[in-house]
Length: 367
Image 1 (cartoon, rainbow, N blue to C red):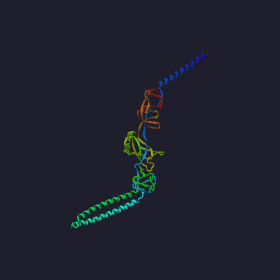
Image 2: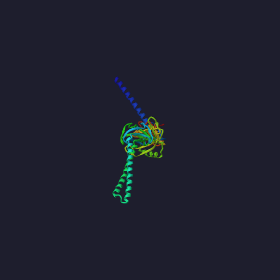
Image 3: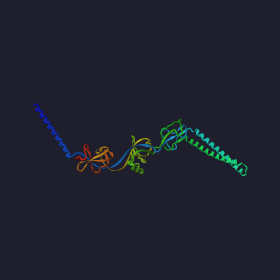
Image 4: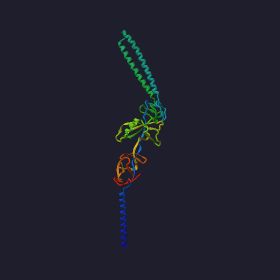
């Protein structure tokens, strides 16, 4: 009896499973016949301003290491660390006592040489008069002429020595070669410095100032055009924690060559910096704004990434899926610019992309 009961139970289970499988097959066949349900988006054009962003940093137009040009002890420092200085302003003074003494000695030597020259000149004039009457030996006359030449050379030598002494004396005071900001002084009052070796400070220009970035070689034509136009509307920078900088930049310099290893070229943009907010070495984000124009736009969720390339499923007129490669551009607000691969008014699948395949039958719901 129990055996017959189990036979009925197993037969019932088998019948139920068979009916369930048939139901699933019917549903799959029904979906296959009617197509996979998807939502599509009609490709359209929008006015787009392309923006290329680059990491950048601030570079002064000029930056100079200030060296001591004479040796000695630092007697005075006229500026504080980080001060803004004007061209020609005093920065440092090195003890000038020995250089002042050298100038006085050189002046005295020059006076002595000039006096000796004047005396020898008078002797030669007198000897030449005597020689007309054969009243003096010609050898004496020749010696005097040679002596006069030597006295003339001594004057030139003394003048050169005086010039050197005055130069050293003047170089005991270091002046700013141009307007800018000095850094932290490398020496303090009383420090001993050596000519041509000791760095006193670093001076750099601050207004205007440049920002350097590495641009893709594809944009060289655009950069050259911007440099020619001298436009300040196409280059913007973003300061750390301060938002967009209020002054636009102009292309100032484009390097002579492209880095073959990276495909980029060094570019510098010039910015006004009246408040000195931009400082040498500061890291920034630079935005290169291209011209505004109409471009094809689709939702980002329509993109399918595969092996480093982008594709989309296009709903054809026969309601089948066509798998197409596209070139994606700028992304914004959940959308992406399509540079190539699509045409206006084509329909791309935005929902139901998963498990789709090329040529699959679609049941389209437009959105």
